[in-house]
Image 1: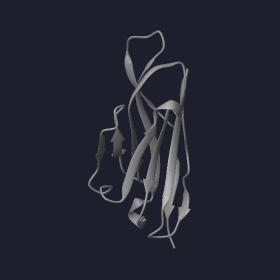
Image 2: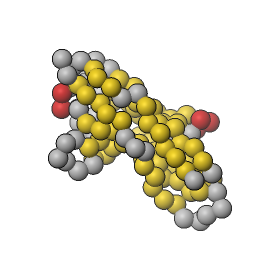
Image 3: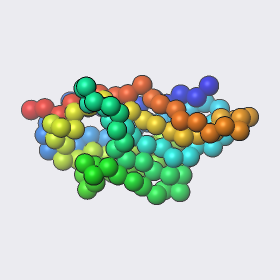
Length: 121
């Protein structure tokens, strides 16, 4: 089985920073693209940032210049450093990983359970 666990969410004041982390565990043959998504109340899940196994990154316009995604391949972990946070950043943030399980040919997407980020004074 494969599991993704997020951490680092919480309450932060406007203008503050927060660092989210996501660790993938289980029988993983290859861990390819990892990403962070957000889902605000009443809205569908949207991509925030992604990073390939080689380190290439992609950011949503709302995250560009404020957020930084990174990964540690040795630990199967992805991070999202969030700075200059605003109230509109309030949402549940989900970790996503595209991977192949050991012994299987299929490449599939896996999701974490999500971590709440609340920006409020």
